[in-house]
Image 1 (cartoon, rainbow, N blue to C red):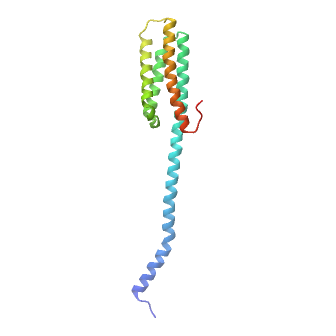
Image 2: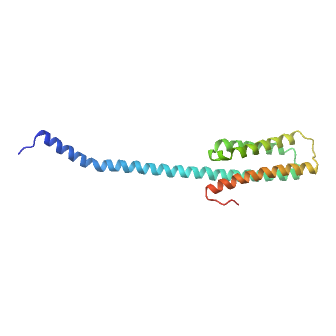
Image 3: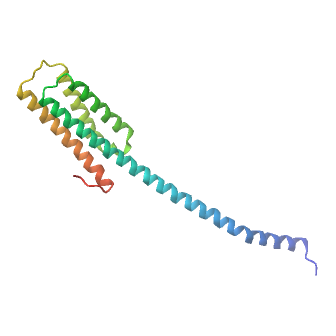
Length: 163
């Protein structure tokens, strides 16, 4: 018995659907894999940004420690440039690294204090008295403590140590 055109069309439609199922499954699976890959890439990028921040904050702590040493040897002519370089680096980090947004107030406080110290050293008559050097180092030490707190917090988010 010959099949009618409608029956033939219905059979062809069902066969086409059966043939298309694996393709649909592959498309769904590819979309799922792509989403998983994107999630992993995002995680790697976030961890890279955190690691970069850790390295930069560590470097800034070393720079501030060096500034303290320069106070001790009365290298007053070098200090304004050093203060300015550290301050500009902190400003760039605050702007470029969104993960530091939670530390924005603390970073701004450090930036402001360094600007004031730079201004004080730039406009003072030196050689400074030992009490001036002690005062500068106390302020510098407080800023280093704040920066170290930020460093410890960032390290903690990537599973690093805080020491």
